[in-house]
Length: 587
Image (spheres, rainbow, N blue to C red):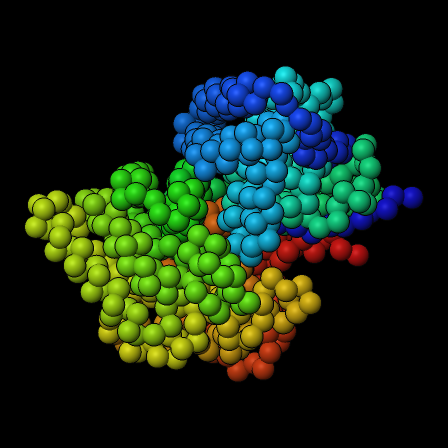
């Protein structure tokens, strides 16, 4: 009898496939430590491995351009930057000379220290980028061991199962033979997930405890729409798979047909649907899925790549590039939001970095960070489609001080006769209850609000969303959170400014009718979810959503809200409940 084990993860690349599982080992290179006699020769061997690895990465960069287009070449450009990190190379050379140990063991120790810090952080971006560092390290170690990468030998069509996949591994797959991908780690913005979407390979990531419960050769169903994976499907799941595969295909085609249409309710209420992105290579997905600009461009990657202090020129180049690609739509650039759990800005580790030194607090305490970032954004704003957003604001004084710095930078550029958008909009993230409660006062100082519902929920309910012991208490549909959202949107409209939402709540189908009913002007989400949310909005009337929101606000718990909304969605969108919540797999 088939086991029909059902696993849940994150839907990283759409599609529904079935095939035999091939498990890949992602273990780090095993390195032996030994003494070296000729230290300078060992240093030379190490530097040669770095150069050879760089040549390979340049070839990979060219290969990706030929395979899926030059819009994804930044993935390998980022790896080249990591490979050439001067601090890593200098430390490795220094340690080789001081310890008189072989280059492999020294380099692996240096990189392992970095990986250990990255994995201990709560920052999702850092964790996902750690896989790129592993990719770079393994490449160098293989060069030092005179061993080239081995391609995955695939005779039949298979589903790849792995702890994680690096960009190099993903690009080496034969697209004709790889049906789908399942990984135990990673997120939908990891480089491998981005490449899976570019290659049209269905993928589900962050599937906990998957590898310990499967074997090579198991038959698996991979549902990249719902994030569902079924191992050894039974007769019912097999029948469901065959039926749903064609339905999914037709449904997805219908969604993509409307991707370039306006997201307007049936009674004429327009809701802008924009994208949350953090990497330049994601920009192509904004267009691909019909996004109306970028509602949140996270800038942390620029700062992390440059150890916290990127040059004005480096930042300007990135912002200008995204401005040109997205034009005429707008791009909201969030100033750097690196918290106290990252040692680049603080010397002492904080007990609770989420309540500590992060966001606008960091930028205002080190004004050069904020001044340089403002200058970079302004210099890149010549097309007049960039906006600035401040993160983790909690006090009005923070906004006033930031505006003073912005005005000073504007004056400096004006005196230097440098062109920039003199009327650039400045907004704030509403992530802290104090801002939502005083939204009417904050609205006097800014041009827009963007609700970060992830942190707003965390701070309102006193729930660390990364703490698995209490994760069941984290729900952005809690009536307390919904009321804060309503306060904020109402205050914005009273002040004649707009209000958007850029948290994960924006892409929750069950939440969308409530958010529309609360009067939100913009929803920003991962690009892949935009067509689905657009379809929902186009079949709603603003008047009925106002009634839905009113009823939801009367309920006493998030469970009651979800139960109520499940009934609403089931009635209006029966296929949505059936498909995108994956319920047809559950027994």
